[in-house]
Image 1 (cartoon, rainbow, N blue to C red):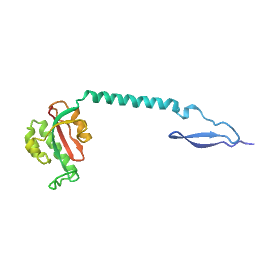
Image 2: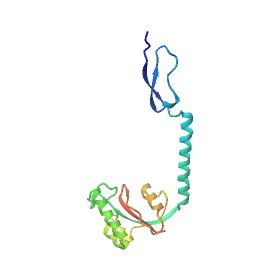
Image 3: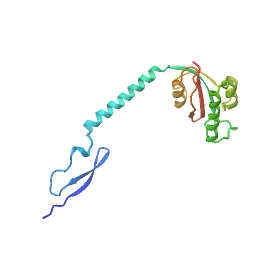
Image 4: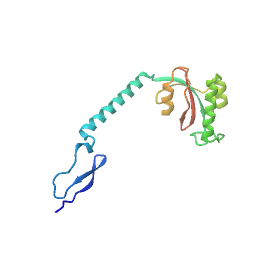
Length: 172
């Protein structure tokens, strides 16, 4: 009499494994190679990796100041949060304008003239885009992360937030 063998899919942890079985047998034909390590191996390793990443982030944040001064140029588009009604450009057009403004700054144009030309933020031209001194977390996360990574007088790459495209310069 021929024994009939088959395969069954078994859900293990977060993956499916194919397991051979034999009707009438009481053991599964499996080996440790199909699993790739059990939870006893994987869980402590993942926890250690997560803790190491969290510690690296804590150390990085500890090296950064808690307050900085900055100024920015804001180029808005039709879907920007709190945009003036006069702003009707598309996101792509806004990005291109921001790129042109950043290129002008990198070529030596005066910050004040570029702010007056490019920034859509009400009152930015009069105050040179100055935001004063602020604490980490006081601004939108992507803006704050970019600003706090800058050195004094350094100009950022273009940073996108729900308000549009920013060019940031750290002042203190």
